Length: 319
Image 1 (cartoon, helix red, strand yellow):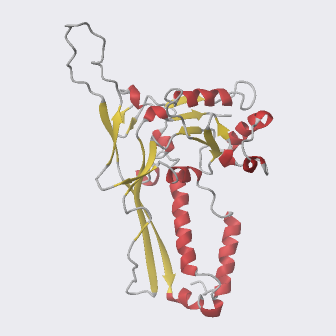
Image 2 (cartoon, one colour):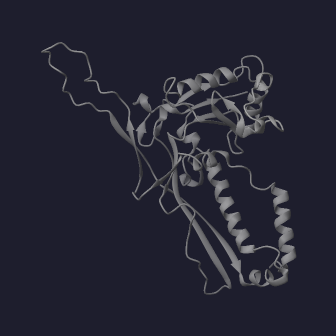
Image 3 (tube, one colour):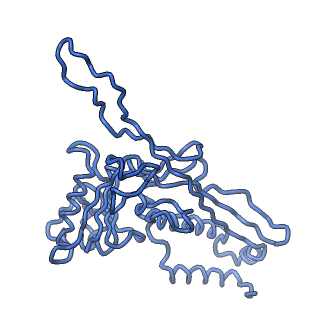
């Protein structure tokens, strides 16, 4: 058994840990969804359902005075279905830790720090899994961008709908591979996917683009010669990844984004759905009968869903 540490040693361990790990990175994709229209509370239900309007009414036509008007029933709606996924984490606080972290020796609230670390750890895991193909941990993780926005959009089943059979349920995709020099195809491929993901000139457009660091720096390098500043905040101190734009869409690199990919997303059509009252829900504190500790539990029930596949896109193979 490891010897007990005093309060000062505990503080040193926390500081050293942050120095070694570099702290928690910005969970860019998670934050884009949580801070906008992409955070969707759902009130109950054994599955998540997304209603889809996928076709026009074919009875609409020009006609002459007494001509028969079409009356065939039109199928214009469908729905996608997604399973719930569960996440949980715990914090253990012993009576010894309470004792040595009190009075004059108390440099910070150890339990509060542990709970904050747990929340940050949840965010880190969620952001990682938001980029997954959904097969990790025996398929218990959420289905991320690699499960929803495919590089082969005509294959596979997503949300219970077969992409091969239904063309409306296919995301946009193109290659960003270079032709001769590094990133010489980046702007053209991004422009193509942006326009394909848009709903006309005045309709919906991608709101943000997430890519990996190397691809982001390639994009940034292409724009240095003709960058336009719109505010003093943007101009001061060089560029920030949050304020770079591509045709109006915010562009940044995410720490967990797969290499060589750029995802074009709109939170109107891709959402982090969660059971109402079960986002970072704290459970009752448990005190085991045979230990002098308290266990604090937190859990979440959620999944990433798509409501309009055509409005999302990916450029892959960027180099």
